[in-house]
Length: 266
Image (cartoon, rainbow, N blue to C red; front, top):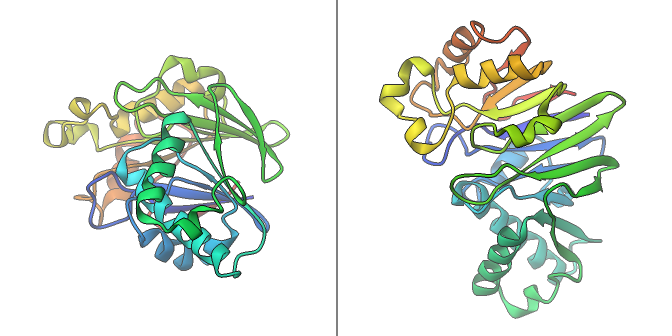
């Protein structure tokens, strides 16, 4: 099993791509979010991944830095289905609002001959809070993070006996997530900026966490590995160093501050 971080930045970054990633088990892939544009295609290629192999896709919420790249994925999938160049089927998962928006946007910008494959070969699947699905052969449980902004789902994947990966979305942890996040082998959590720079970046006004917050949380949840993403990019050249230095004060597990396209063996 491998985790490929396609993008690590927040909504307005220009020095890296928006946060999104792929979980792979040999030739099966589970893609999570798509960033804000067709750069998703470049990131997949740069990571050595074929966009055609992304047969299971999950969209956490409707914010454009997560959703617009999925419209590009839909365009590529549907266009190539129509041209006879895409074999088989694909599935996009999301809560009701996300699936509705994706269908409506695609209907406005794609042709009728492409749209006819929606729900025929490109399945748009609504998932509910607490719903379990088998994806790339693994048990995945979707959950509502109870966002204060846009409705958003995270997920927990049980990828081996006694091992699980939990994605908390891109907002601060909510206690309702404890049963999924507690004792995670891998915990993926947003960290908008350093706590020491909170006055500069104002994460709390945007309902985001700092490195300190996320690391204190991971320590409390007894997570074995913590990946921090959805960050600012003003510190991009020293982000790994600075975030690690702050985080180590509050978290004793394995702390990872990825750059775009970094991979991890799960």
